[in-house]
Length: 232
Image (cartoon, rainbow, N blue to C red; front, side, top):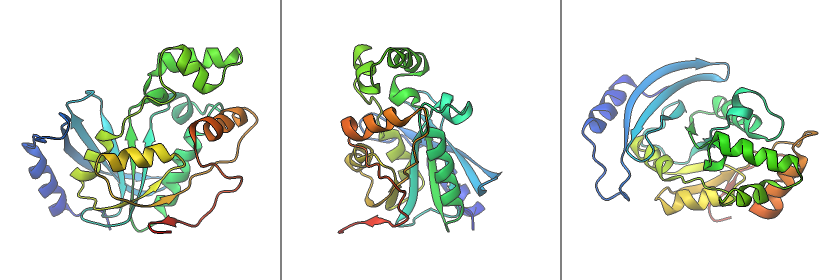
């Protein structure tokens, strides 16, 4: 069951004049919800306005998540080269497809798509970092040479998007402990973690090793199906 029309109407009315007082100066409003049949199942596409970066972030919702607990959520940052072009230098597209497929088989869940290309440094800088990696630097070193941190992403907008959908708690689909911690810092109640570990290919093994060794990503050899839940 998708989000009912009466609930959608209520969310849109609630957000029409929403001004987000006191939320770190960041205001996020839900502005549209439309049905989106996909090859992964029936989804609804939810568009959001925000006053922080003026980018169009979206949530792709399967089932009715409004006022629900323990909602499986994938917070995915844009990767044009991987998501759209099929680059083998990263595992971004595989993680996105795996998340959509898993959630499409569940009762309900959300894939949030954030416009944070290149871990927040933008497409041109990501390609500059790739050029440095072609000369032997790893992904962390390349970002630092360009004057960035290893990861410049922020999840405040994602947290507000979940709030706009009245999601009470989430099971976060991630291998990145910092993403989990940052969402919690912004008030999201994370009650579990669902790994999304993709086997390496011939081109991204070093990239994945760097994420594990230098950025603390929880990448196992095999992809577990069990959920690591709160209190365990």
